[in-house]
Figure 1: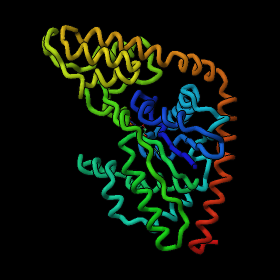
Figure 2 (figure 1 turned 180 degrees about the vertical axis):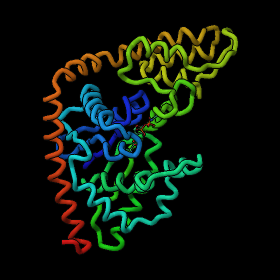
Figure 3 (figure 1 turned 180 degrees about the horizontal axis):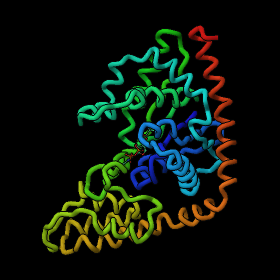
Length: 321
Ligand code: ADP
Ligand code: TRP
């Protein structure tokens, strides 16, 4: 079964990206022929408009993914724009994609609702994402909750094309881990780099601690019992803690008589320990840029083999070849 996912190099990855998506990439990597992961730099162009920043972000994304456990022997890692077949497939798909389908997509709808002007790139973003998925006959797409709509749209786009030209595309399914599909941020709303409420995975320890201590909590008195359910500090704690630790904190909440400050301090220590190995590995990899470039070049070569096969099948089906 082909597994595929992409992640945009729009900034450094945060806990939401890790628990919502990257951890699943790692768990599902089962061979270079079947697990494909890529850095979506063409998508990032809809927001990053500084050349050097995009270059740096792309390298950072590769380093982060590899440090977090993506293994080039068990998965194919590549940069989206290194597979030029994607652009042709994207165009072909655009010719059969209904406008209404794209008008309903949240990224575009939200921007319009805020009175901002959207580029055609943002509007057609889901078609490029569909092309990403369909170009490799992907069956399973690990993502966080906010991307599920895009995977559904991909199915609709594939269905519309298949309806006109025959069974060309495989219909993919989103793979979502319910417990971590929507990791909360410091303020309790969804963690996102655009909300300024994120803790980055490789954030400097001092900054990370400060951020954790700033997690918004209520002002109920120390002794009052509290409900752990729906409490975002508790939710963040349970991402890093063992099940015994989580159970014990739930009991403490229900009993009352504790301060949120002590929970935050514990969370900071747990998070540091959790990513300590990855941090060390990242430093090691950052000193070997040639090796990273080689991994990405190898990945692109592998990805292009599959991409050219699917593109040819598509071109033949619609009369381009
Ligand atoms: P951001 O919202 O910070 O811009 P992206 O949209 O680049 O993040 O998301 C990259 C991946 O991480 C996607 O698969 C997305 O679903 C997942 N993701 C992002 N934020 C969260 C979150 N708070 N909880 C769970 N998954 C998330
Ligand atoms: N749109 C995704 C995001 O913002 C990134 C992405 C691009 C993607 N192409 C993809 C995810 C294909 C899964 C499959 O997170």
